[in-house]
Image 1 (cartoon, each protein chain N blue to C red):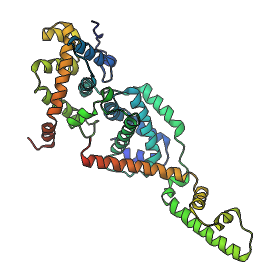
Image 2: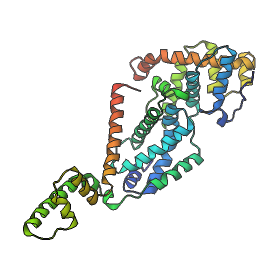
Image 3: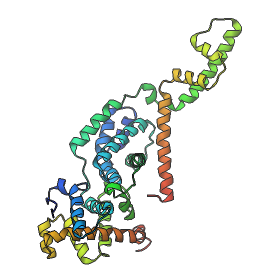
Image 4: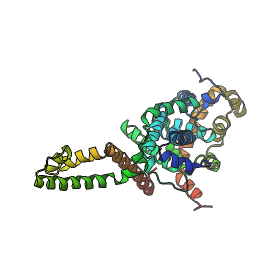
Amino acid sequence: MLPDERTIVERARAGDKRAFERLYRAYAPTLYAHVLVPMLGDRDDAHDCLRETFLAAHRAIADYEWRGSGIYPWLKVLAKNKARDHLRASERRIRLRGAFAHYLEVLRHHGDPTDAPEQDALRSQIEVVLTTLNPRYARVLRLRMLEDRDRDECARLLEIKVGTLDVLVFRACRAFRIACERHGTPLREVIDGVVP
Amino acid sequence: MNHPPDSRDTADTGVLSEHWEDVLQAGQAMAGEQGSLEDEIAIARLLRHSVRPEALDERALDSIWRSLEPEMVSVPWWRRIAVVRWTPLLAVAAAGLLVVIARSSTDGGVDASEGIIVARYPVGASAFEAQFERLAPRARERVTAEVDVKRAWLRAQLLAQAGVP
């Protein structure tokens, strides 16, 4: 939340365009990265929905009622609805073109994504899933996807040919997907504190 | 077999980078399999997202803002003081008042103004609509937008309660 967010919101509600621009510049990147890209899986669609979100916000902000949690949750709801409308209008499934919001939900990655511990929680849940995989699959995903190591280094560490690396990555992604869905419910319970 | 080019550059290995699609397609082909890779691409993106979420670059941020500005008309004073919330009620009250004036002016044989002439006719939906538009221009648009947003909010709440992702 911005330090003087309530004042900025009140000014934006009164029609101050500069105040609204501050809200836009503060929250547009977060909505884009953590709501629209996961839901849509496409850069141009996410840009369009981001624009529509703030246009709707500008039209409705005069009636926005301040809440202690700030304006981000309200903007997030608007963004989600715009993304759903966009998917419905184009008659596409939510996972089409690599949208990954579904898996974020499975991992129960909720809360304010600008909050670093929430991003840490996602990483923790990914680690939980990785521990259930074939160790070789888990290792290639860690090296290549999570640690940003290049192909040659990954192949050397895994003692395989570079060409074989792509097959391993492909199979590891599939295994992760199956494990993620299979362990969806227990993971939810762990996060909700039902299981310690 | 052509392998996807490799790079540690963020732009090439970001969440939405086509690099991961190329890697997975190459891997699938080498494994002798075929079919949709949507779910595998989603997993690759999820993992990359956990490391470094897709960034909205400054140029795109500015570009979207510039495209928004022309559509952000300044708010008139009467909307700033939230008169709009009472606009429908005021419009109905004003229309009712005009009806009373119209009746009394007809009884007295006084010439009617343009507004009174409208009110002389049976007060149906179209007459109210006309009065409403004259008394509060663009209020209808405003009310429609408000209903749209509140309905969207309610829908999100219901979906959340129903546990729909």
